[in-house]
Length: 118
Length: 194
Image 1 (tube, helix red, strand yellow):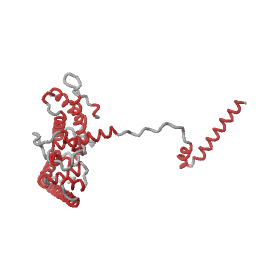
Image 2: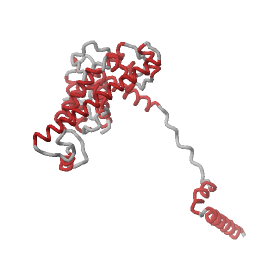
Image 3: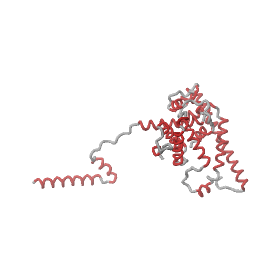
Image 4: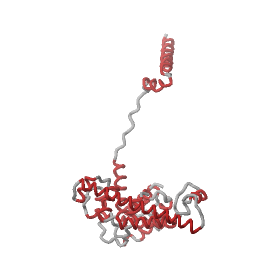
């Protein structure tokens, strides 16, 4: 753990919670809804118990923000983009071969259709 | 272990009240996040026991959230002291070869000395600046506003805090080396890792 955090968490025990601000104030401080010159900020830097709550509040707020963020949905499914596929395999020098094979298959399919039609 | 896997029930086997469940889950998440070297299964066990106790005494609790954080913090402190919960992927004999296991008590001592020095050397104002810098990612402008001083003065104040911090760390390192030399000399041993 970060040494500075450890310092704040261990060096200022205040089990009697003397002069501790309320939970709402600590939450507001963590959410940066209070000015940094608020006296609670100074207290949090001098009370290990409040510092623990303060870091917990920051964590909770981060989690809430993460859960509220709408994740981008997957794009709708579309058919194969042959030019993309061709460009993807172009590095291996297979693009022209792949397209040629595709054309041959389409031509073969058409010919079969024509034969069946006649 | 994720928070959804906590099984928070009372002594009677019923679910604990949502307020207590929320408080315990938040405190558990905090402990897992802040102390990643501690076995999360032990923390989960402590959290479940805490929820049971809180549910049994819910009439006496002034603030469940505050109580849960204080209790988890205390539990973490106990686990750190006993060192029963430290997770390590390295076998014990290898740790001993590296001297990690052997110097754990010494580390605790050095850390407490360092913290005492930091308490002495850093004023309330310095600690305030340090907390703004580390926890709220404040810059010189924010610190200037918080302290009611100019940005230039805030920049200098930040620099001074860093210098004091560095001086304490340097002193601690020097003391640590001297102590280690004393220990090895007193034991008549030369450790590879010093």
